[in-house]
Image (tube, rainbow, N blue to C red; front, side, top):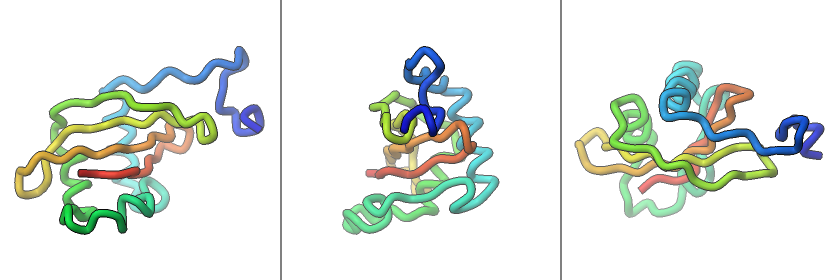
Length: 115
């Protein structure tokens, strides 16, 4: 199945993670495309932990502004996507961490969670 999705290279290796610069470019392009075509939120990001009071506007604000840092997370072999933990701030200037799963093939990403 992985071959059908073209997730691995011809040598069967997982793709390298994106550089911070390439990840930022992908995210800004995806935000410009809009929800569903460019980006989406996982159910966990949308509905779990309402006590955090973080909405999509905070997340988009944090992704569009300069980031404090990026850490490469785990690789999802089933989807062929790397997860990235982005440290930024929300609209009020409070620290915000956003985990995204980047999809370079479709120039899109999913917001996995945020805190």
